[in-house]
Amino acid sequence: MINKNTKKITGYLFLVIGGLALGKQLNLWSFSWAYRGWWTWLITIPFGFELLTKRFKLTNLIGLVVGLLFLFQQWEVLKLQAASLLLLPLAVLSLGLVYIIDR
Image 1 (cartoon, rainbow, N blue to C red):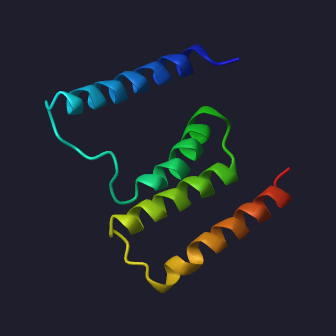
Image 2: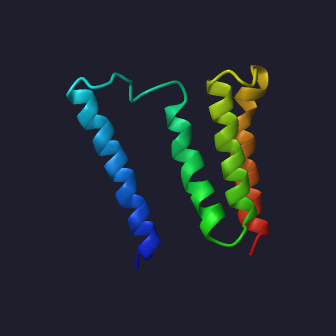
Image 3: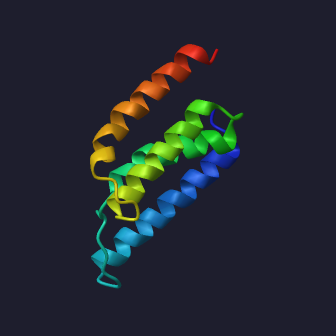
């Protein structure tokens, strides 16, 4: 069953997205839906939401940090060249270990 607050937050999110799309179609403002690193929010938002709404879990914190690292790398806040190639495999390995160790 969906929480009442979750329904409200989801409703507000849809209102904002719909309003932005409508304003763009009516040429009230101009923006691009896609930007560098947009896909990192697909990692960051679910882990951050779980971290804030549920009890603290190490997997949620690791997922949030990995998502933010990918985002900062895409925005070129962090200059990770060789290390970026290792970031995803290390994140997957650490999540696997946490799932095995965390009961």
